[in-house]
Image (tube, rainbow, N blue to C red):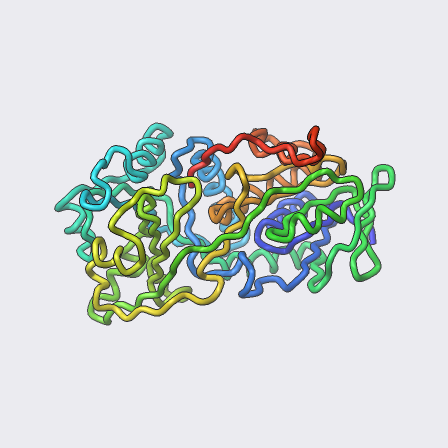
Length: 397
């Protein structure tokens, strides 16, 4: 079968690439090794946040552009996929005494410098507004919130079906070779001939890259998960204050904590995760678990029933050696592009990432500056035969 674009990987990045490419009239085939929306894949979950409160202005700007594209996606599909409850970073002096070096303070400064919508609470005002909290400072990204993943997947599949995009599940790439201007992709079926190839295969990316004849790319990926994640069921008399109508997404990243509110029709319990992102200093604090966070900062949940998170709602991260996205052309294989290394923060960027990959595939270029994400920094073939890697750099979440 002939196509303008073959996409390997049917997660949210691959589906958004197909969405943007098919919008431009391209004939698109998506190859998925498993099945779309599998609860055991990274693109499944009930607690995925979106926000712009990064320490790095570049990521903050791109997150804002993704937010714009999410809104466009909602308008064009008629789907409600964003729960606009805000995203709040908190601080407590007894946990992190130097307030001016905390994530809340620094990310708020970036948002203000970029002119993005923010709000600030201190002391008594914070406790009056959120009586279940015990913190001394809070800074809110007002446009942040929760992404409804099932709604996103359903909307994408509906639109792609209407546009005639072929999605083949349970199929795996065995080999891809170039033949002049064309690429022959061999799977378990008859194979596909295409002008462009996009790889959005998550943890399976290197396996696919190894099957591209002549490709010189091996991304230093590692897999990681939160240390602990738990669901909380507040008692009926206080449940309302923990819903997205009253509570934003809450993070205390200096202590490795993030919290997602109850979202009616999506998640019937509040979730708290404990994780030490590799791009943030591992500050020693009194918080070393979900339980100690509740004890110190969220007394409103002390008597709530809690259970461990056991499915992929606990998150699954594809980390990269230099903690930057990997997005762009595949060295040694013209016409192929890759997107991977989202570091647990990528889902919110999905409509933007999909647009970039579609532009690269169909136009051989994009209107966005993605030089810092160039896969060539990991090109194989250094003097010693090993991958050429960039100097480690922190790209804060």
